Length: 153
Length: 215
Figure: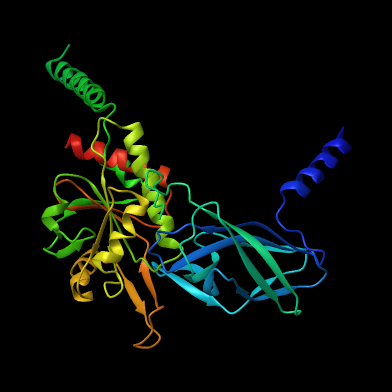
């Protein structure tokens, strides 16, 4: 029974999984928070797994949907919420980094057009070994965002 | 039985009856001690709010008088904030929906975001931002930082405009994540420090309001 479950899990994973890269970097739960159409900034989140035998550094991100992407970390310091710019994000070998609300995140500047929930956006991650990965991020409305109002322009 | 023993017994019984009676009377009531055990800071004497003059996201003036008549949750933020502010506004909407569904007989508290970035947060900018989260939410801004400071200074809300150069338009504003609670008299009643949890704030607010209505 166990082996069948295992196989079906693998098949399901193949069907629905986030991109799995042969080079050992696995990116899961990649999403961008839908923002009010007037917004010039947004945030993107994901889980970045490093299955390699050595640490990797994520040194840049870019997307045709945004003017600029930076890595930022939200910290609470002396009662102030601050965003600390991160020139790179290190993912230790056999470890992962979670980009999440009010933590480490991608700051997405100047969307080319307002993105609506359900849309997919390609983001290219550049690593320090010269390799790049293209990741599909899904735009999501956060739980709690006003669902009574839809702006279809 | 001596007279003094009788008096002592009588007083003793009277004391027991008083204690039992008083605790029965107090059963189900929220005591001040209960409020001290909350994660929110509840002021022993709510603080009056000095006059301020801001503009809401529809262009209407908003003063300390506008706060009267309902409970208000006030958060400080700015619209060029990608992470914390949308997260807090979404949480406030979870709270608003919860109040609407779970306590339909009660007035839904007011939810307000005061901008700490009046330079970029014009009335037009706020009008395109605040209703996205909830049509009933209120966004407030001023024509200068001085106008905002009238309110942040008296509430002890720190913020810092982190401009790298005078021409910097992508600057970050570091700000307090505190959530203020103003009572229907228009006085500052309590303060919630971040990180926030909608369920916890709602349950603590219900106790705070219950205590306020009893007294």
